[in-house]
Figure 1: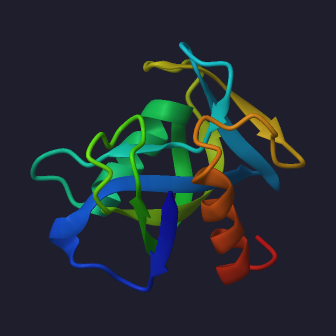
Figure 2: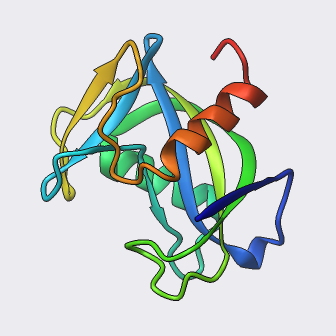
Length: 144
């Protein structure tokens, strides 16, 4: 499996949005109802949706975030078979950062709960991808 990073990618290629998120200086991660691991908020882009709209929708659906500032970090791609990519062909996404200031009281999605971390968790849903996205985010946006 290979992960690549780009300044930009043609919009039509972008299929995923992943959002590195913090609230009050703590990392925000999701715990899916069907898994015992943690993941960054994110997911697939829907038809007729911009990649930024996808990021905002996924952030809300998976964390309940209703007040936040969001900004683009970089484009990325993943080569290799994953749970969401059976062909293994290079698939592209956009990485964002969100500083969340307010959440809804309840989640209305497949996410069981969100958790706040001072340090990054150890048990990842996508262990070959998520740590690399976080590393690139930290490299591009030091101090956040």
